[in-house]
Length: 88
Length: 206
Image (spheres, rainbow over the protein chains, first blue to last red):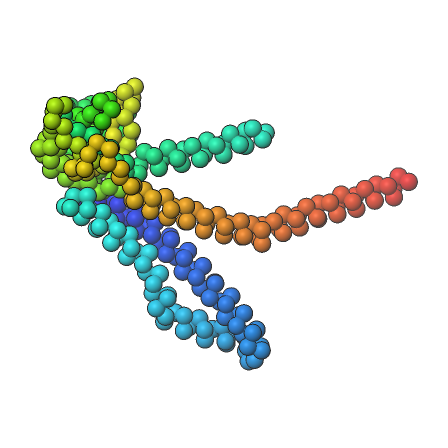
């Protein structure tokens, strides 16, 4: 079981690195889009407030939660491989 | 210098290709002639044997390994080892070694009455290094010239290419937007300073 523990620990660390970079990147992209939209809408009101409202809406969105797939997809993949290699 | 650069690039891609060729599953059409078990004491080639750690004691110098003897349609022999990969690399998560050995023994056939099989495996056979591809699965083939389309390898290669491409494009964009202007700034200020130094030198001497 030491090998399984090693896989879980290293896998978790690697996936966390991917998850954190992906979420930072995704947030930056969202911020850029919000700033563009603020400019398109005629630059009305406070830019920072507009962007902050948009990002708060993004934090609660399904799109944000889809990033958790970084953890879910590899686990399902490993389960599927175990099934097809050993029990199929 | 160009030769060195292109040599390094070629070496890099050669290593990437070798890695995928070793790790991805391949399908052979063979008939199994026999199965056996042999003690193997790993030496310099130990990297080409799995270190599965699926419950057995670790740190022993050698152990018994299952082998599957087979013959290709062109009558050349091919020997597979049959080892657990366990939770380690490559990620086949194979634990059913003994079951696979039982299947292989059951599917044996003779030259006179051949029974063609598809053996899925990864790894290389090298007589010089004494290494064997690891059999992962076995099933009956429709005949000696069945053609197996390697869907798993296709999907993995396309996915890997897409990931590399996505990272490469973003890295280039990042370099163009952030690093190149910075280097240009540095270059500009060095040139300016040199210019000023030359002016000062000219002024003081002329």
